[in-house]
Figure 1: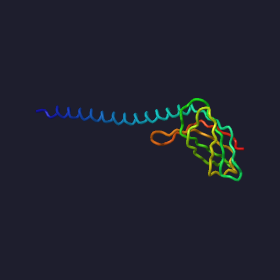
Figure 2: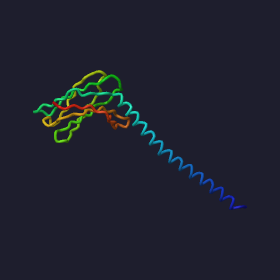
Figure 3: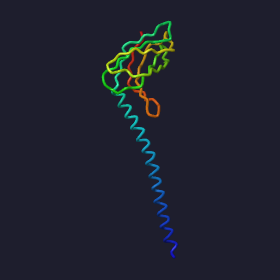
Figure 4: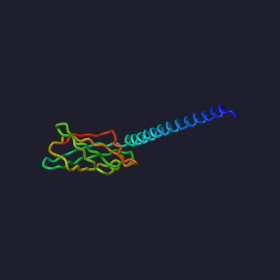
Length: 148
């Protein structure tokens, strides 16, 4: 009986097995990265089709609320809400989330509350989408206007 011949067969099988496991691990990692990037591209594409414009913003001096008029152009999918960032004269900011879509070609009044209405000088508005895992994808396109 040749023991040397048998050990080379076992060694070859082990090397092939280790190689297959390594390929499986690499494929698993690459597949997850590809799926993540595909999801980001999908939401970024949705964002490109949503066009918002802030037409007017007003914060009353004695109130902690600001009114923002947002107009949406035609096209794009239903989004989940607006992220409104209010900038103060000193450069700091406050964020206010508004839930809900704006129908295409509609202009709506959104009210942001709990703000320091006296010192806000500018507002930026971004649409956002909620992903399947309940995280949000904030669109990179913003519309902004100085607060009167």
